[in-house]
Length: 114
Image 1: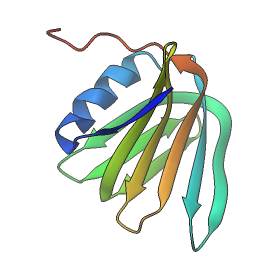
Image 2: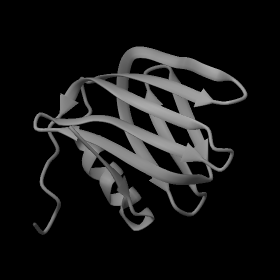
Image 3: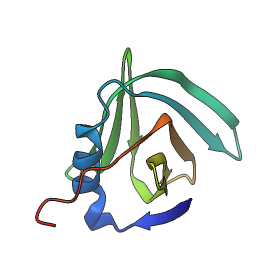
């Protein structure tokens, strides 16, 4: 299992690649902060997509029945295994960690032009 930090220049294209394969997947969204502790925002609900909008500087985690927005993200980490993407961690401007865990790993498509 490897964890790597994505450069900000990769955020939008990485999310576009991931979102194509998310149909039918389930995800859990956890918010971890020193002030609030750990809170589960969504537990194993169908995930529809993950989008980064550089104009508004916001991530949108689209889940069935819930849009989870993360404003002013600072860092993005992805955890991958041989089976594919396992989780995505987004650190916002207030140092809150928003962790999106996939119930089953997502095998990532090859980057376009690769």
